[in-house]
Image 1 (cartoon, helix red, strand yellow):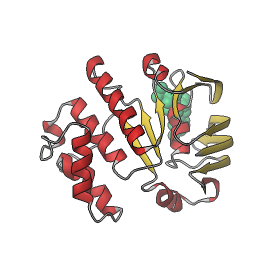
Image 2: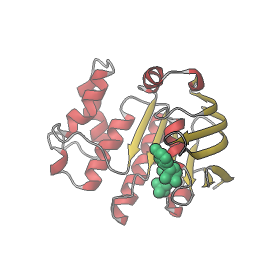
Image 3: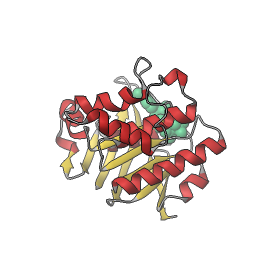
Image 4: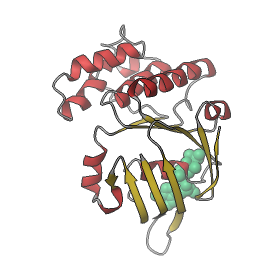
Length: 223
Ligand SMILES: Nc1ncnc2c1ncn2[C@@H]1O[C@H](COP(=O)(O)OP(=O)(O)OP(=O)(O)O)[C@@H](O)[C@H]1O
């Protein structure tokens, strides 16, 4: 599903560049669940940004879901990503002026789905929010907002779901429910799941754990 060879990422102004990813090699099979662990600043979010097509690698080869990302422009990357990749972030990034239903349905509609609202409603029911469709983000708890974000990420039936610290802003019992949901939705969509986390218990639920250290993969093992 993902094949990365010698991925390097350098960011910053000329003369003050920082090499953030220093030659990452990684293969991820379809349907795998993978946790990315590592100290703050080791490059986890940067690796996710490159693998999900949000950021272009400075050099290296990258194939995602059969598409050669290394040769695509930023615009083509955005097109390649659409519908194929779902992203869940720590800060839920819901649009405050839209209801829960609209937050899930509108991106589907923009992507051309004819049954966007029906699909969005079904996804929100699946994450236990059938009774909160007309609520705005400010009227939802943190855990509920993250459920909406998961429904939004999964609704287009992406091949890959990325989650960056999906429970970082939630208390422990809410987190457990969110993690259950992520794995359940992954199974139901037969998607590949890649989670960045500092939580060893969450990592242990993934089939595979990689550890980043200073822009490289320091270890890669079955959980
Ligand atoms: N635009 C940028 N320009 C220069 N350096 C950057 C830029 N973005 C990130 N960095 C640096 O790249 C390094 C890796 O950052 P990254 O966010 O990928 O780490 P991380 O492992 O996800 O950390 P955390 O666990 O704290 O989120 C950090 O040292 C960061 O300061």
